[in-house]
Amino acid sequence: MRVILVTGGAGFIGCNFIKYFLEADNEAIIINYDKLTYAGDYTHIKDLEGHGRYYFVRGDIATSQVKKIIRECDPDYVVNFAAESHVDRSISDPMIFGQSNIMGTLNLLECLREFWSIEGKGTIPREKRFLQISTDEVYGSLCFADDPVTEESHIQPNSPYSASKAAADLLVRAYARTYQFPVLITRCCNNYGPYQNEEKFIPACIKRALNNEPLAIYGDGSNIREWIHVRDHCTAIAKVLFSGELGEVYNVGSGEEVSNSAMAAMILRQLGKPEDAVIKVADRPGHDWRYALNSNKVKTKLGWECQYGLEEGIRDTVQWYRENQ
Image (cartoon, rainbow, N blue to C red; front, top):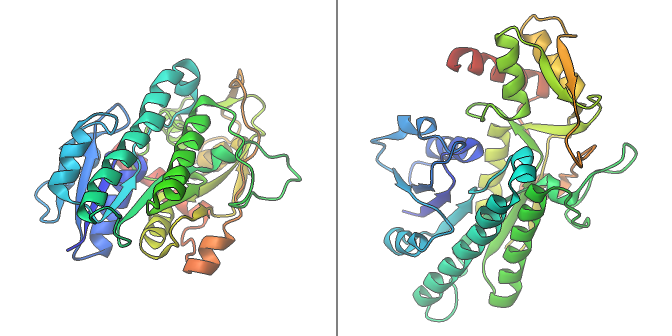
């Protein structure tokens, strides 16, 4: 049975991936390694207690405990979701993002390199795979007329968060080139869906609307994001993990771009609230205007496609938060 070590599996995307994968695969064992911060909530994965192919270990990827966990679980695959991810928090406290996103990734890579090299007696077995979960924000901001970015586009991060993720991506690339370490990278657009922390835009809007409070929008609300349902992201991760070409980067996007104002209006409409129930607040420092991905590579090379349209996905997400707030 193949063993998959998932770091950050109590977070939003990580917990959704674990739940999806345990349903989709009847044989793999999953080890969930998470330090349980405010965003890594154990209640997200509490329902998996007692599952015969799932185990949870509390810990931090930036500590020496990683070596012990790797020795004990002997993973065939590692999927690194573990990261601080909120842009506003990175602006107010960037040091945490450097420690977790950069040094944590470096520590994980080095511990795995050491263990897998010993197992392979000097060389890393090619069947091993390390997948770094990154973000479209590493590419920086686009103008309205710009084409969506490809995997070959320049990395131009504009926030401490996106810079820390870009640095982690470059470390992953360096390990591939220097040590022939078996890596893959995915860069996804903005996710939405069940279990997302309420500090994020969509769940924050849903919560405020359910409480009959106005939705808060940065600046004039014209900033544009590409949105994907987290379940679609999870299916792409599985495709890349098992079928992607080692050393490659894969963009993962839906192609559905909307402004923050339009997204707020969609949520209000789904809840039967007045679409003008919004307030504009002071803009975020260095707020990127638009993100958009060209995802042709993962579609043509790996045969992946989105299953959720944006309206349908938001409707299901609104209903989930209605039932789980």
